[in-house]
Each structure stands twice: as C-alpha cells, then as structure tokens.
Length: 179
Image 1 (cartoon, rainbow, N blue to C red):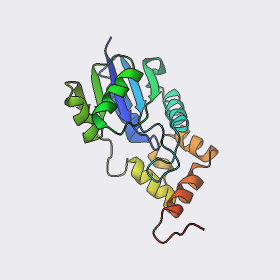
Image 2 (cartoon, rainbow, N blue to C red):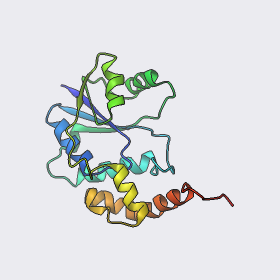
Image 3 (cartoon, one colour):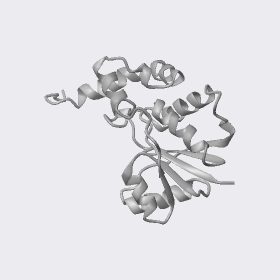
C-alpha cells in the first residue's frame, strides 16, 4: 500500500486544496493530510486553529461523493524552528509514507533533500484559489464563499470566522494602536 502526504496550512481549506486531494488520491492508496503550523491561530496568515482546520477539511471531504474518506487521515503537525528538523517531526507523527504532495516549493525542497519523492500538485485556478486570496476577501468584506467548498463556508460562518479574520486584519493594519 502506498501512502502519500499532502502538506499545507489550509488557512482555510479551499477548492484548490480539494482538487489536490483528488489528484493525490489518484496516485496513492492512502493520503495523510498534514495540517502544518498546527500551533498557530489568530494571526493574519493563520487565523484558524488546527481543530477548526481539521473540521473544515473533514466536512468538505465527507460531502464530496468522489472521495473515499476511509483512505484519508488528517494529522496536525506544529512547526519546529529548525527547518531540517521539521521533516523529522513529520516522520514521528505520521505513518510511513513514500511521496509528499505540496504546493509550497520550500516544503518540497526540505523533503527532496532527504531523498523523499515529491510531487508539486497541479494548481487549480491558482490566481484566485489561494488561502491568501480567501482571507483577503474576507477581511475586505468581499465575496469569498465561491473559493471554498460549501461545507467549509458553513463551518467558517458558524464559528464567526469572517469576523475573526476582519478583527485580526484591523489589529495588524498600519496605523493601528493598541489601546
């Protein structure tokens, strides 16, 4: 049985991520979705907790009839300040794997340096399908829902995620003073 990792921060999980899950499942028997930067939340680039991101991913995958959720594990992995050590931490927290799927060139480099097979997943509508774009639209009060699977939009609404993203963006805006 071949196992692959799909590594990302998923801040939030969007339709591009979903396309990568489907792509990866076509190449491996089991896919481990690694939720990176698991210790981070309530920051401009990382507004959601690991638990919230896991819930978004799980609900999106459960709702997609093309995906066999029994072939997927979702595992949070916190950052380590020494990049080369981070890949070893991943090894300790996930089952044995043969290939790593990711969209981040640096993540792919770290695994390639260790001799692990890597696949840069084909990007689905990359110009708009990025978590950065989703967060930017949320903060600006623009339409973001079409960029994420329906269940992810529901989870974000339920947890008042847009309000959180706006509040964090306002707090970190130039000229904001702590009072």
